[in-house]
Amino acid sequence: MKNYKLKSYILILFITTIVVSSCDNYLEESPDDRLELNSVEKAAKVVADSYSQGSYAFTDMYTDLAGSLGVPDANGIVANSGGNTIRLKDLQIYTWDDVTAINQDTPNYFWNNTYEAIAHSNEVLAVIDNLEGDEKQKNAVKGEALISRAYNHFMLVNLFGLHYDENASTNLGVPYIVKPETEFLPTYKRNTVAEVYDFVEKDLLEGLALISDEFFIGTKKYHFTKKAAQAFASRYYLWKKDYANCIKYSDLFLGGNATAFVKNSADFTLSGGEALRKQYENPEEESNVFVIQKFSLYQRRNFGFRLNSNDVTILFRNPLSARDVRNNPFIFNGREVNFLPRLFEYFFRENLSSTTGLAYHIAVELKGEEVLLNRAEAKLMLNSDITGALDDLNIYIGKRYIGGALYTNADIPNIELFYNATNPEDGILQLLLDERKKEFWDHGLRWFDIKRYNLSVSHVLPISEGGNGRLTDPLILTENDLRKAVQIPEDAISLGLTPNPR
Image 1 (cartoon, rainbow, N blue to C red):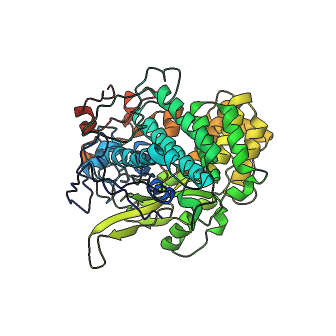
Image 2 (image 1 turned 60 degrees about the horizontal axis):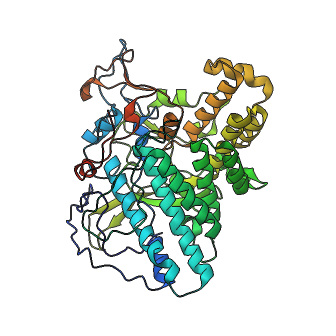
C-alpha cells in the first residue's frame, strides 16, 4: 500500500482546501516547499503516490445498479427510500444533477484527487531522465509514471466528457497535464476527447515499452505491473473501438490460460460478509491485477440509492434460466438493501489515540474478468465473431453459473428472444453487457458501458425525496443525454475552464 506523499502541492484546477466527511483540517503549505527529487529511489517513492485515491464507484448510482429501494404499494407508488439515508449528493447523483458536494464519492473529489495523482507523475517525469542511477530502474520508474498519468487522464475524460465517438475531435475532454506546476493558479484549457485519447495512447505505449516488475517491493498489485498495463490497454482500445488492438493486448494479458484470471465464485464460501469482502479484494487472487486504496464511504450500504431484493432478482436472470452462484452469498443491510460482499471498510486514524480519520476501501481497479469480457466484445464487434465471443463468455460463466450451464449456437434464438434483439449479434452484445453489469457492480464501470452504447436509464424517485414515486412515470436519462458528461467542478469553471453544455 502507498506510504509516501509528496510534501507540498498546489492542487491543480481546484481549491487548495480539501474537505472530507470526517476531517475538515485546512492544509496550507508553501508552493515552493517541494521535495528535491535527486535519486531514482526518491522518484520511485513519489510515483507510488501517482494513483488517485478518489473512488468512482459512486457512479453506480447514475445507473440501473441503483433503485429507489422502497417497496411500491398496490398502486405502484414508492413512498420512501426503504430506510436508507439519502444525502443531498446522493439525490443529485441519482437524478443526474450537478453535484455540489466536494467530499468523498463525488465527481469533485475524484477530479481533485486524480489531478493530484497526475501531479506526482509529472514531478517524476520532469527529472527522471537526468537522474544518476541504474538505467533499467530509471526506465521502470518512468514507465510506471507514464502509464499512471495515462490511466488517470483516461478515467477523467471518460467521466467528465462524452464517450469517444465520431464527434470526439470536437467534444470537450479534460486538460491533459504533462508538466509540474511552477506558478500559482496556472491557466489551462480543456483538450478535446480525441486529443486526450491520443495523449493517453502515447503515454501508454511508451510506458508499456519501459515498465518492469523487477523493482517492486512486496505485493506488486498496488502498482502498474506489466500485466496491469496490458489490462489497461485492453480497456483503452475497447472504449476507443479499436477492436483489433483490444484483442491484441487482451491476448497478451490472458496468454494461453484465460481461466486462471477468472475468480471461481463457488470458492467464496467463507462465513460472514467481512471475510468475503477481504477475500474478494485480496491481491493474492490471480484475477486481481491492480488494486488501489480509495478514501470512500460508498461501502456503507445504509446511505444512498441501492438495489432491493426485487432488483437483484431481475439482475441475475439470464437466457439459460441458470442459477447464478453470485446470488447465493448475499448480505442484507437495513430494511431493503441487497448487495454483494465486495467492499470492506478500513479506517485511517489521524494518530494512534485519535477517534477521527478517514474511511477507505481497497478497490479492484483492473481484473482478469474485465479483460476476458473485453476480448469477447471485441471479437463480436470486429468480425461478428459470435462463436469466438461465446467461447470467451463460457470461460467466464463457467465460474458464475451453477450446473455447468454454457451457451452454444443453438441458444442464440433464445438469447434474441430474451433480449428482444433484432439480430444474433445484437442479442450476444446485450448478453455481454448484462454479464459486465453483474461483474462490475461496485466497481463503477457500468456507467461507462451505458455511455459507450448510448443506453437510457430510468430511476423512480420516492415521494419522500421529492419525486412522484410512480413506477410508471420514472425520471429518464435518454440515450444521447448531455448529462452523461458529468459537470466539471465549479472551482475549475471559475478558473476559466468551459463547462459541459446542458
